[in-house]
Amino acid sequence: MAMMSKKILIVDLDPQGNATSGVGIRKTKELKTIYDLIDGECSFDEVIKPTIVENLYIIPSTVDLAGVEVELVQVPQREKVLKNLLSEIKDSYDFILIDCPPSLGLITVNALTASDSVIIPIQCEFFALEGLTQLMNTIKLIKFHLNPDIDIEGVVMTMKEKRYNLTNQVSSEIIKFFSKKVYVTTIPRNVRLAEAPSHGLPVALYDASSKGAEAYLSLAEEILKRSGTPYKKISKTRKLRFSEDR
Image (tube, rainbow, N blue to C red):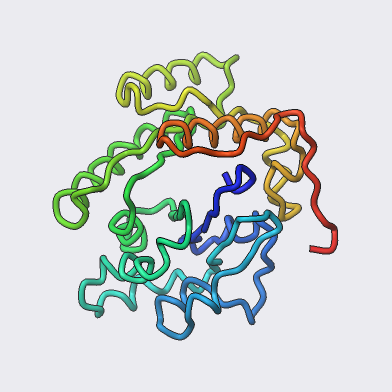
């Protein structure tokens, strides 16, 4: 979406920090992160970092974030800490994307309370369906108690391998459950998608012609179209370049 001329901020709210390393940010001891922002030690100007992609910014994360749940327990309205913080800058970006941890603890509750909508990526495997029930129950509770405006933006089927019967069965169950919320675009299993993070690059820069990059380009277009947001179209055959001096 950033390559389509939209100003995007990623908030890495996962202590694993995969989104951070995936856009080329090095996790040094000096790096200011979302933990420092929540803790009140830093301002947005200190933690928001530009990435190797124009129009794409990130608030990074490291393993230090894992301790924030214990610290937040004593904070008044602890579920709304992130929402109150992001309210200061939300009008400065076209989209703010919050990358959540895989668990449904206080960090994820903060993310859901701060969000207008949720995009749910689901691996086309059986265990992913089991976790989905718990996620939907959490979203329902958040909607009732903390954020009445939250809704499901869409569901993305990932790691899809059409040759496997199980994949097709799981896909059918997902479509049956979510109906029109499921994006037409699916993300295939793709070697380039697996390789890109190890190089600190988004797949669109690592290999723009790969099936994985093309799938995410189509997904970005579909998300923007559904939201009625105008965007600058990118040719799927265009080779995107990056600087080795990043």
